[in-house]
Length: 78
Image (tube, rainbow, N blue to C red; front, side):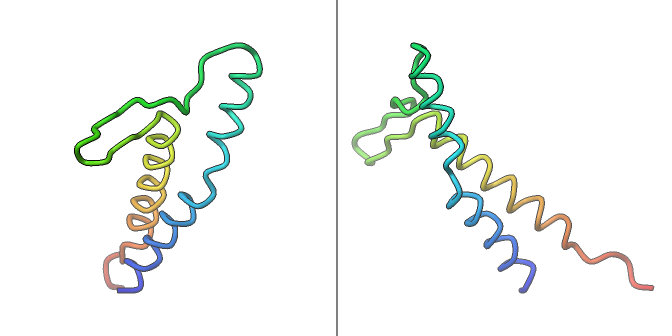
């Protein structure tokens, strides 16, 4: 059970520290390029509006949680 909560904390911590896509977006728009904060997945009936930055944040959170889960897998008994 502790492994689950540590994996959840790693995923939530990664999602909470989601400033990297914002900094990248400021850099891109400041240099006259497109934004990554525009809607990429838009599904209004369900209220889903996701940008590329949102998808990158969700992927990073899932990766952090998955890696934490995998690293905390108990090994064979000694």
